[in-house]
Amino acid sequence: MNYILNKENEIYYECGWSSDNALFLSVDGYRYVITDGRYTLDAKENADAEVVEARDLIKKAKELILKHKIKKLKIDPNNWSYKSYTELQKVVNLQNEENFSFKKRMIKTPKELEIIKTAVKEGAAAFDEFAKVIKEGIDEFELSFRFKEKLTQRGRRALSFEPIVAINENAAKPHATVTEKKLKKGDLLLLDAGIKYKRYCSDRTRTIYVGNDISMSKKQKFPKEIQKVYDVVLKAQETAIKAIKVGIKAKELDKIARDIIEKAGYGKYFVHSLGHGVGLDIHEWPFINSKNETILKEGMVFTIEPGIYIPGKFGIRIEDMVAIDYNGKCEVL
Image (cartoon, rainbow, N blue to C red):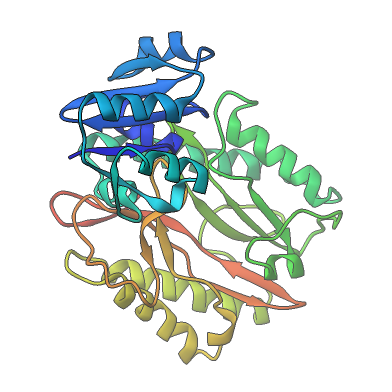
């Protein structure tokens, strides 16, 4: 199969190395990484491909395509600028396949599963460490700073994404940004974050009660109104997880959780999909939503994260990553 890639994680998946200025070209069994002089030495030390140095990456790719007399080349049109796409088109018949790399990466190998498990384990440990430094009187900016210190081990590892730290009504925004709102006893605190291990991501959300004992357990005790909603979200998550098996469609899983929330009267407040795949990218295939016909299979890794968001009051989301192992069993990571 002849194809060309230009995204960092796509390139890394193919050859174990990437940079912010590189192309990966696979033609007639030859594998090339094309990059500029800033990265050549590093690429030669780490890439499982022939490294070609060039200042104009597209020009060099065209030269290699002509050298190998390639007639057809697979490409994901979503990832390329119009200029680069049309330049390549001058020398080869481009065969469009959207999400080409995501499809390849949807089934994780046993080695990938072990790496992801480590990322999840270390990310969860950081949540527990953060629980020890949560203090009343500090605002969301300071909470986020302290959270990132624990997640990154003071800069020793990377974040999967910018963490979400939201108090009370700010948590009603699924992708809330931090504010100067200060934490006090009795508040609800939503935390969504993940870390990378060997470039693979983790992703986790907990909604916790700020009391005398702060815990990242999914068993939380809130005031009555909030507890009612929290219990609905937890039931939706746990029921969906129990339903995961080889052969079920992604949209069927979404429906199981959504039906529970709708039956409880909160359907309009569940405003996003049930989950998404996780790997080298924080959002990958399969997407667990109401329209996705994808059949779940061994080796897939994804989140289960139902939520209810009541504007002006509070939001609740509970998220865990799960994997379908090669025995066909669902494992909460």
